[in-house]
Image (cartoon, rainbow, N blue to C red; front, side, top):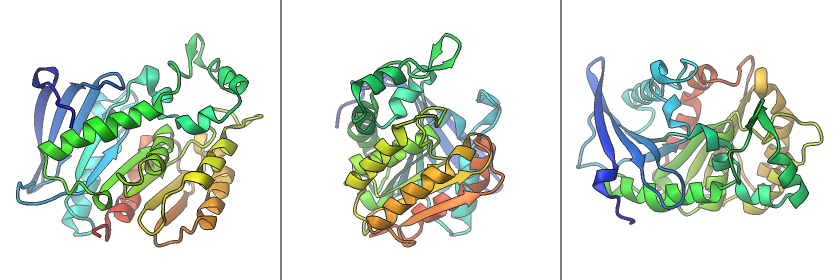
Length: 305
């Protein structure tokens, strides 16, 4: 494991009382990396966390959007802590650690865009994609696509640190990854690139267009080809996809149906794969919060091997 200099981490610990239970949120600011820019990482520990147990771990993207709506740009959150505590208390899922990796907004798109499918596009197409603007004077990409380095950060730097500092099971069957939109894409990519590390991925409102239009868009076909070649073994891996029907999610159904066809061809069944459609759900944290229990239950039920 790469040693993390203690002085580079600013640690804060927040205890969160919920009824008779108390959970803990540990914040590591400026977590260092030789692959990506330093970023904040939150570690959520379930009520009753004990040094005598071994816990599954879910790595989640867009970490600043997961726990506290008072600090988010749109005043919405996933409510991950509430969802986890409710499912754990009901005995639906085992006590689990959540590692929430904050994004850096200016480079989020290039951190999360699956690199190998992007690089499979013609060079001219790649260059044209780099010219797309998110808003006037602001590019969609904050630099070259570098999701391979983002995953190296998670797999070779962050995960070894988490496994050394916390009581994790650590094996593939107990290690998962989850995100929404571009975070859904990078979660899919992580499972395919590191099938020995991650046993399952949940991809909510997966942004198959890659950009914000479907006009003459070659990106989805690049994803289809990648999945056809790289999907992991369905007997040892789980995949969850979903989509809503309004706002940006209205683009996704025909693209997801093509992905579903590839999943069937590669041997995935209802035992290891779910795709769900949520009528009326928009592309926002309110929608993801309302259905978060579905992927959490799917990934964390009967995951011990």
